[in-house]
Image 1 (cartoon, rainbow, N blue to C red):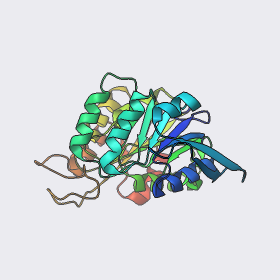
Image 2: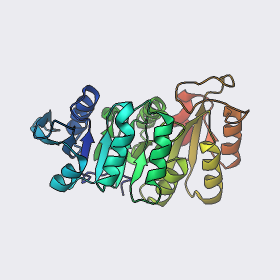
Image 3: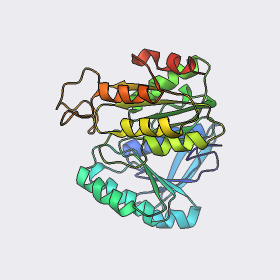
Image 4: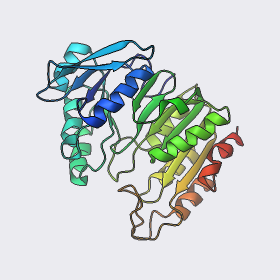
Length: 297
């Protein structure tokens, strides 16, 4: 049972004709992902070409609007590679077109734009992953985002992280240890985003094909503390974790826009203590993430 995406997921890529959009769309198609449409205003009628998983040529129609793309191709998921100043509008356009899931890769979207976007999505049927995230992959079935597909192997470990780089590192370690992944989800590092740790943990908890979870957090906000509360009360599967930013000074942003200790809250020590109190085994260094989870299985 795949989480969020599977081999049958039909996807429209917004910003498919841009440099980032075209490159990563090509990578997704080569992995076997069903990219059925692209969307770039003013480029409707064009065709995007890429190489499929067997070396075959794949042609993807480009539309001016997501609504038209959804109507013509029955796409249910949108992936956003639109520049930051227009990305929030792109998310809302996909939601208005009826997309069930929007995966926003774009980094640097203004916080006020995302506050308005989150508010507009409340009560609707569209789920948002990101922004500023690597995307989601169900190994061997669907890769939607910017993660390197070759390091993933199908299996039974769910992976969720605020950091794209830590996701790849954890996956590389798990694969090397013979632990394949059910689904790997990057929730992004922005202060205002869509799906959070608790949302994803609930999905992993309900998924019969996920037998354990690796979660990577970082300083800033309280997402990890909320995840710890959920894990302590409801999680039925072993969870290993890692928190980045143990040496970060208060008030200094480290990497992600949301990774900042403010008002004495959001420190790595607080997050580690909360997770350990919930029964999560926290890796002391990034190099030990995979081994830490394996020791719990």
